[in-house]
Every structure is written in structure tokens, then in C-alpha cells.
Length: 399
Image (cartoon, rainbow, N blue to C red; front, side, top):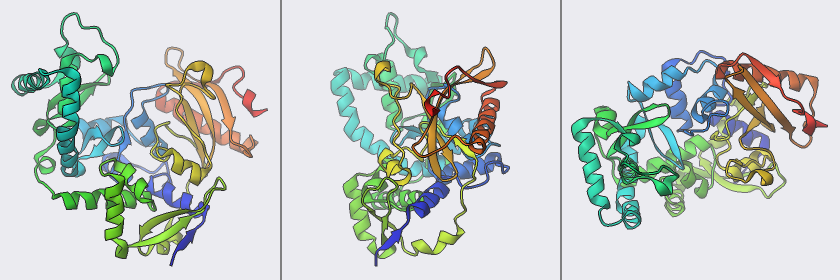
């Protein structure tokens, strides 16, 4: 029998799975932070710091007692987290490292040949030389290996040693030991990842089962394409085959769409509806999300669940931007209610709000605006500035 799930229940389930339904002021601590990242799955890393870097804001939006130093300790001292690739560069629990070995193997077999064709026949020798230097002399940053006279640029203009570092990292031979001013410091993987996580192997079948099963657990419900996209470790065909092989553990559901689209056929684990009553409603407060928040990473899913069309316009030419360079989504309870353009001016000590947009049908009531201002005050303190400054015309889109 196919289960029909209301859009509201679907939103509640996904928000809870993504850590956005627990009380945001509860004491977290370092152990709680590790558990939170484990439950979410990963936290994307990005260099843009308009207000705060993406990984910090993703975690702060879930718990206001989050401390940056706890994340640094888990990454750089305890080895309980590591940085690598999901759909993008991310912070991942080290208990999952054994499964990433399958990605390393794929990178070694598939992508290395592409890099070799791009960089030339001496590419392998360059990788070996770079690896040997780190093995013998210790951790390095890309700038330590830069050749004289090389001009910096985008990834297409990386100097050969930077390319070697990236390839060796993607293959799992190097790991990111720490960051200095957000620059990666590379070292041999076995010197970064503790032996309890570094050692061990799993068969390919076990890897596929974990990748699909753990994705569905964190999504709550999903199509085989969404299962594959969550970690970006398996192909849609592999996820489809996994669903077919485990139908006795799964049930079919259809999800009502918020945007008036056709209900979405999906899968969930058997017994799926039984726990609906135990899922808490998310806090009613307004929260500013990172543009890279995992709640919105799958843009199509976000549109179906929240009727919220969101795109990052960093790479859109300024005259063609609909909103702005780096605009933050706004969550209120279980609804996406708008977006805000703001920037932390640390020299002046202010969080400058440039423009606010609310979604269709969302009114700028006094209660809602009070909740928004309370959240902006929290964000300002987190970003290390003293005040929220509403710039001229910040509310022009509300009229």
C-alpha cells in the first residue's frame, strides 16, 4: 500500500532529520557537536565569509551554543572529523572514512587520467615528488611549493605542485591536517586520520549498502536519485538497484508538493508513519540559514517541500542578479519566508542589512519583524560585531 504524506508532515520530518527541530539554545558541547554533524551527515565548507564562513553558520543556525574552537579540536586535534568531497568540499565524521576509501579508489582510477591528459606526461612524476617531499619534510601549504614566476589564478591556472596536492588529496593519499587563514595544510593521510578510523576496509557491496541506507536515514524519504545525490558516492543506477534489492525493508510513499506540483513518489524505511507523532515542531523563531545549508542543497527538493526557489548568485554577473551576490535564506518555524542581503563590516563593528525580501503571502507583521531582529542580533554577536545597522532602502522590497 502506498502512503500519502502531507506537505506539512514532510517538512517536519526533513527539518528534524537536518537538525533544525531541536531547541537552538540547548547546551551542545564538543561531543554534542560531533553527534550533530554525524546526524546531519556532513557540513559544507566554503571560503566566502560575507557574515561568517558557511560551515560555522550552518552549525550556528542549529544551535546558538556552538563554539568554533570545538570544531577546530574535532578536526585538528582529535581526528574525529575530516575534510573531503561529497557533492562539494565538506566536513565529514571520521567514522565514515572507511567508506570514503571507495571514493579514493574511483578518483585514482578515473580522475587521475583526466588530470594527466591536462597537465602532461610528467604529471605522475610531479605527484610522486610532491608526496615524497611531504613524507620526508612534513605538512605543507600550496604556497610553500609554488614555483618562482608562476602567476596565481583560478583552478585552471594552478601551478603543478598545487595540482599535485589537490589530486593526492582527492585520492586519499594526503589529508587536510588544518587550515591557516583558510588555506589548506596538507599532510600524509595516515598522520592525520587516527588509526581507529584509518585502518579497515569494507567490501564494495557493504559500501553501496551503507551509502544508500545512511542517505535515506538522513533524508527521511527520497527517490533513488535523491539517495544517490546525498553523499555523491554512488550513481543513480546503483541507488536504483539498491532500492530494488531492499524492497522488503522499504515502503512506497507519495509526498504532497508545496508548489502545487504532482505528488512525488518516494521511498522510506518500513514502519515509516509510526513515528510521526514523535517528531517535534521546529522552533517558531526566525533563523538565518547559510546559502550552503544542507536543507536547501538539493534545490529541486527544496522547491517541492517549501515552495522556495533559491539560487546562489555569486557567479551571476551583477546586472543579471535578481537579489544579490550572497543572499541568506530565512526560515521561520517550518516555512521558508524570505531572504536577506547583509554583510558584517568588522571595521565599523556592524552587521549591515542591505535588503530584505519576503516570500509571496508572507506579511511583515510586527511579531515577525521582532523575531527577525532578534535573530539578526544573535548573528551579529556570533560574527563579532556590536550592532545591526539597517541601511537606507533595506525594506524597499516590502512595500
